[in-house]
Amino acid sequence: MTHRDHDSLVRRQFGASAPNYRTSPSHARGRSLSRLVELAVPRPDWLVLDVATGAGHTAATLAPHVRTVIAGDMTGEMLAQAGMVSREKGLGNVLLVRESAQALSYRDHVFDLVACRIAAHHFPDPARFVAEGVRVLKPGGILALIDNVVPADQASAAWINDFERKRDPSHVRCLSPAQWREMFVHSGLSVIHEEVRPKVFDYQDWMSRMNVEPARIELLSEELFRAPQSVQRFLNPQRTNAHIMLALQELILLGRSPH
Image (cartoon, rainbow, N blue to C red; front, side, top):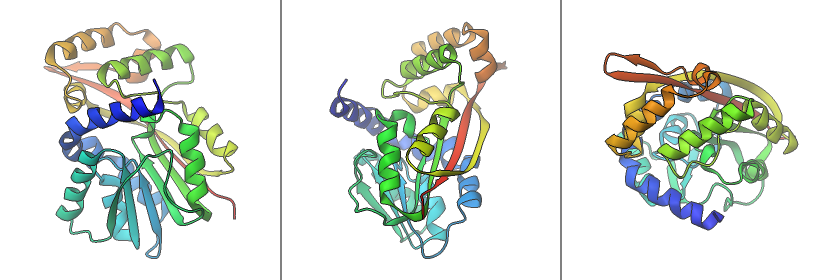
């Protein structure tokens, strides 16, 4: 699939499910939002770029702490949801821009912080995204990545990524923490913080967010509980009454550009 074809698929998938992401608990109220503020320590004079903003929750979280946040996304319906979130919160310093995460339309060295949260697993070329993020950062600026990750074991990683694509065909690949760290260092960033936390959530909500049909949800749940033991240890699926709970692992990685 070409990058253009993939971008079209992303727009179709997320255009149809955009309202679900405005109300999704893990996107709207996930612990990584407050953690990003704690770690990046944004300042009132900062200019921030939120790459692949989705429904705009990261932009809205950062906006009260900085001068301006530019929130970019390639899906118009997502930007409409981001606009609603900003208006609901009374934010006047969030600017919405339609653009690709891998071809940023800014000159070099303009942003104090570039953030990307729960989106990079949809990028066909994550190294290009990191390089673009570094390009637009000021000297000493911070690139903050938050995304779901997979174990270093290639077989387990392949199973998890294949399962994700069955839920969401626009999913490309979750990387391991070591792969992201290597990409940051290769791009000239100094890693200043790294942590991985489990993110526990309801399986049904996770599937419904992408409008998966009920019959397919059931088939995929059966597949989940037949997964290899290494995968089950990583995702930890649990049946609780009528619900299935599982855990994705979420990486928070911050790198600083050279002075």
